[in-house]
Length: 246
Ligand SMILES: C[S@@+](CC[C@H](N)C(=O)[O-])C[C@H]1O[C@@H](n2cnc3c(N)ncnc32)[C@H](O)[C@@H]1O
Image (tube, rainbow, N blue to C red; front, side, top):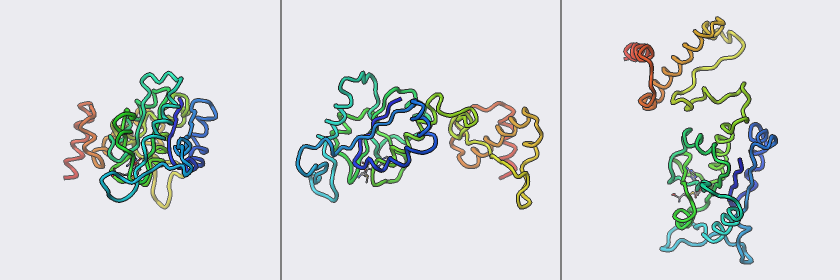
């Protein structure tokens, strides 16, 4: 997969993209990330990327010309097909694991990072195919949001995660939160690992994990449970627990 990132602060990506899973994905040629500086596509001596908002008001707005020119240079000569051009904005659709899964299937993505008061509306209207927010809060720039997206997408590119770090049981992968995890020591400060996990009975362990996932989701994110299909046995197990808690 190739991801082109258009931004004002390319150096912000250096360390995060040289560590852990993203580094490994790049080294095994499963991921190619190209960072572009929007400033390189300005044509005045000051390399101006922003200007005052029409109508007045605080802050500066990113100008459309360098962003269109850069995006069109990337698209030129490439079979862009249905290539998503994602604008990072707090006004976009909230990023979910479902969106991440869909984007991870794309061969080529473009991510556009805003800054200051945001980006000229014509970029929203005539260049972006998708607008995505990483949460209901406002960051200073889209760079951190792009890093979050790249990290979440990279985990799902086939071949990136080894079987020992598979994403299949991760929270949000199947509509549930993940079950609790434990490692050695078996007892720490008198707190013991649930005995079922030491039993070696894989069937019972799988059942315990599924039930814990359901319980956690019911307790922490009850609205998520509305979307999950549970077996009759799971439904009656969880309703008994809910009754006991009330
Ligand atoms: C200070 S914000 C601009 C916010 C804009 N004035 C508004 O109210 O919608 C600057 C840039 O940070 C990025 N950004 C801020 N919050 C974000 C979020 N929650 N998700 C994705 N990108 C975000 C966007 O690229 C945005 O253009």
